[in-house]
Image 1 (cartoon, rainbow, N blue to C red):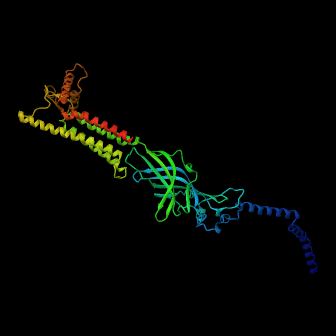
Image 2 (image 1 turned 180 degrees about the vertical axis):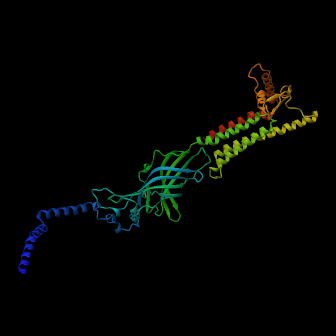
Image 3 (image 1 turned 120 degrees about the horizontal axis):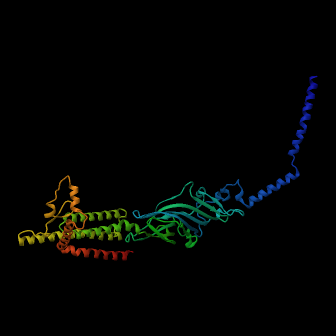
Length: 468
């Protein structure tokens, strides 16, 4: 009984599983139409692989460019003719010009063009392949460096600014964004009315002209600049590209490319900061020629003030300039201006000395010192700066501490009425004082009033006609 029930159970299970097994067998058995379409797809994929290897994702760039099959430590065409490397430059900005360090800082895009047949690959649909900086260390690239450079770096925000583009025929474009600080041999003999010629020189470090030939890719059009390039103190007159050769006794001749630019300095800043203050100080020193020769404190303090101010201007200009051994144009102007200021002080020393000698001679003849300012009414200069008639005003005026301000106004200003006797007396006194001062001025002061301005104006005419 038990055996019969087990037999019935297995029979039911076998009947249930048999249809599923037959369905699976039908699925696994390939249909003739499906198999033919799959074969066509496989053939099409293999054909695409042959036609364009750049579209095959499983292959790495090393396999596409055959990097593992060649030694890229050697230059292209090693042992044959020199490899030509074309250069073009896009100047982005001139960041700074330093007169003290005699250098400039420039940011630009440097592009190299050459052909390396080892990197050629078959491609009909894709014209070129573009890579970033990670491929640079695995292939040969030109070893360009900057002659007379002090500092340089490749921009690396957000990644290194390097682009490598490989064409199917092996032509390569290598572009990099660089900032370079290089020397500029400046001539300051005409500073600040000068024009500076600076250049950035490119050269191969290891390969001489027998292995590498540098040239401008598009001739004079290989150097392009941004239209918005401007500097605070300079006007960029010209950008030009040129080429030449450099000789080293131990390694031979090398091709050299030059980026030349001409800078003309803006003069307006220096006119306001240097030339105009110097002119004012010189003219201020001439004021002493019109001050009474007996006013020793006024004339001495004025002369010393102008001399110290000129010294300050000279120190400020020297601090912002390199310590060159020749004379600059600004030095000529400032030293001549300082000489005029110094001569005005010497002029008063001579006037004072000759006046003292003249009084001594009069003393020996008359037995007393003659009065230089004898007028009909004895007047004096009070502490408030106004002229007074001693007989009529100073004897009658009280210098009380409580009414000092009122007395000052009464003495100097008085009433505004034209009929006031004080106004009339003051006018007549002023005319007499002016006449006496003019009569008692030394002859040196009289000639200095004309000679100093005339010579200084003549100097300015010669200076600006020569340097401008």
